[in-house]
Each structure stands twice: as C-alpha cells, then as structure tokens.
Length: 142
Image (cartoon, rainbow, N blue to C red; front, side, top):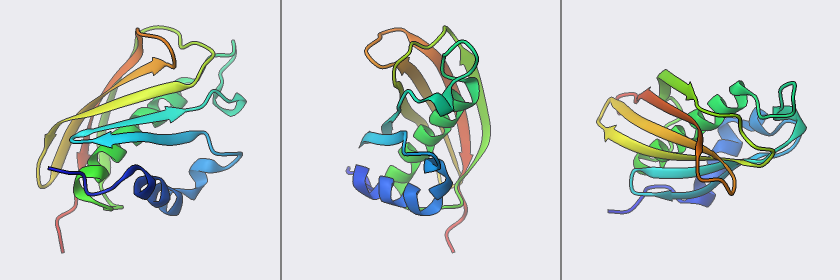
C-alpha cells in the first residue's frame, strides 16, 4: 500500500490552504510521509518562543496538529475539511534551543474518524519533550 500524497504534494497543499502558516517566514516543513505516518519539523525561530527562550506550548501544539493532519492527508488525499475534534497534550520536558520534530502515527483510520498520536522531540535529542493524541473528523465523500 502506498500513500496518496507525497511530501512535495503535501507541502504544496498546505501552502495553498494555510498560507498564513508562513507569515514571517517558513518554519514548518513536512520531512517524510509513510504508511499511516508523517514527520514534520518546526525550525527554532524567535516567533515561536516564550519567555526564557524555549519553544512555546502553542507552537508545539500546532506542530502536533499539523503532523497528524499530514499523516491523515497522506493516506486519504487532499481533504481540506478534515478537522481536529480533539487534541490532548502532555508536556514532558523543556524543549531545547533547536528545531522541534513531530513524529505522527495513525492508530485508526476509518471512513469518518482518524485517531493518532504524535511524539515531539528537540532535533538531535532522544527524549520526548511532549506527547499528543488527537482525533480528526473526516467529511463524508460527496
């Protein structure tokens, strides 16, 4: 079984449907997609920092949500109205001053719902900085 969207197709699609994602410069990148998986990177940039110089919680949550969206779209194709219905987040440790990596894995992909998890790491580190689980609603085909 192969994916329905490649890395370059996903990047182009995200650019089209979420151009606001790159205001102030591109920092989110799709690095790879596979069967029920996706890996994304958020570059370390001042627009993503909180006081103390670490990557903010909202930035980590955005990366997790985007990584799940990428994993789903890689499987089902460009469905703009697939939407997050829940996102549960556990902050485990302070991220380093490095890019943040989000590794998404789909646990279930049905016709109407997708459930997955995302492990977030500081680039070059082994220990997770955060873990997320999420559910997406997939619209019925018309």
